[in-house]
Image (tube, rainbow over the protein chains, first blue to last red):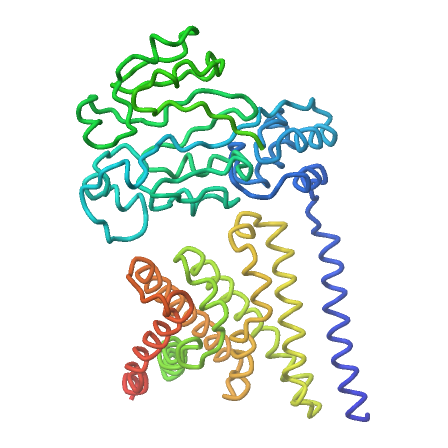
Length: 268
Length: 199
């Protein structure tokens, strides 16, 4: 036989056999794909942030389709839109995702907060905290080396003047930064409503706090007395606002002698 | 006895002196891409060992009874690529059906093996060296184990690199390539060892 024809034949036949075998195998050994989970996965934002409590968007989608959870409002980056879309696919009721954004509870800006040393180590809050609680005198405040900046999948956090600041318009409330901050300084706050927040978590006595930072809470109780709604409490020499009780009247912010209570409105 | 000696010699040569990654520079893509963690490096290597052995077992008879018998040796490359690609796809389908846990842990690495030149390298090398079927299988096994050794060692080196203070211009791929060259250089130390063991 002509060697050229033989060559063409051999390659084609091997290709044909391989193709047929694959085709047969893909039918015989087909694994049923969960159509519902795939459709839900399409709606989710795909940030794999884990705010829903499952292992990423795929995990949440399969949990919804298998009925492990019936809550369609767990995706905070997606918000109400995604909840409504999921409800349409699954036939469950759409939930209400309370819009919220992250806020860094510290105002220890460079010139306000004293430093005890110059830190030249690895640029990581986690690492810096191992050395005497960080470069600032206050060991509770923002270290400012940007662990949260790197954790944020939406680039909503930046370091301004030594302290991390969240841009509420960019924040999707995935809580990645909340988990990352070694000082647990980042809290979620409701959007669209003015609430008073104490931007300090210092647990030292007032006199010590005053030496460390000009904007630290000294636990003077003035805000507790000023509040008409019993929303402010002082624990461990630091005031704390209960967001459920706070009406955003702003009385506490007026009386605060160190100006560490701020009225925060997160408009997007 | 002579047979075992010969097979052992092939195995050790493939693992140490003729290591696919570090001496022949084949399969560099997964070597750099998947060596960030020891776990994934081991998973990828296991898949490579499996596919190498399977590809050798299938391509050896094809070469001997179809290509050589008809004087069509020049078709080797294209036929082998065809066979390897089909094999990897088949392995993927079977794993997905019967071993979903292993399938999920291998992830993207399984289809990536299709384009791994170390697999094509081992089947071509078997033919160039004139090995018989048993020798070819041992050679494929040795090549796969050599790949595993190189991957796991380099994954260890890379995890040390993570915690090093590297100059900015060398960060990332440059320092990885420098480290790879040093690991490769260290394997030169095995040159001549295997030949002299069995001398």
